[in-house]
Amino acid sequence: EAGVAQSPRYKIIEKRQSVAFWCNPISGHATLYWYQQILGQGPKLLIQFQNNGVVDDSQLPKDRFSAERLKGVDSTLKIQPAKLEDSAVYLCASSFHGGAGEQYFGPGTRLTVT
Amino acid sequence: TQLLEQSPQFLSIQEGENLTVYCNSSSVFSSLQWYRQEPGEGPVLLVTVVTGGEVKKLKRLTFQFGDARKDSSLHITAAQPGDTGLYLCAGGVNTDKLIFGTGTRLQVFP
Image (tube, rainbow over all chains, first blue to last red):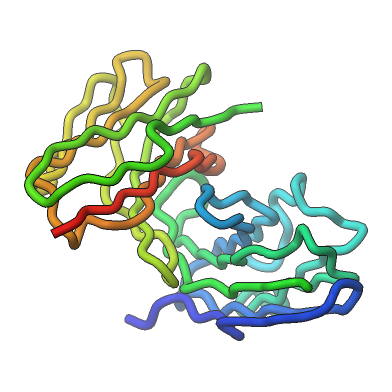
């Protein structure tokens, strides 16, 4: 069974530029999550989708971050414009049941904003 | 705001030593999961505990959920270099979502 795929794996941009990350969840998983993980810390949930609807985006900085999940499968997370403090690993995860069930994570995208 | 504090934040030990990582909160969780994350990878689930007082063993790893479902511990016996990584606890909130802990970075030297 293929795991959660993410791209790119690494991205370096200058502040005020824009960037987009892509995620392909495990086939059949209805729930998709985007997390931000600062180096050495636990992941912080940015947004949770159930199929193509948003379940929770309370911690998403909506003035600069946006996410969509068209057709309830792949998802993209965009940052525009980026700030220095956005430097982090962006993890995508998916789960079959959603809620507090097991989540399967992708390898993440390491973003460096200079 | 529900928070999960892990201690210690960092742990550096020699191969063969035992260690315990703690995960504490003032909130009650419906379940508690432990993940391990290796450099350059996403977290991988180790175990889920759902009942207060529950103890689960996975080879050299022993997980315990507190009686009040507010805390948990992970004990590793005879640590090996392959145990190196970031250990994360995650609490289930009303079966709706997970809240991740602050993380414990473990380094096991041969």
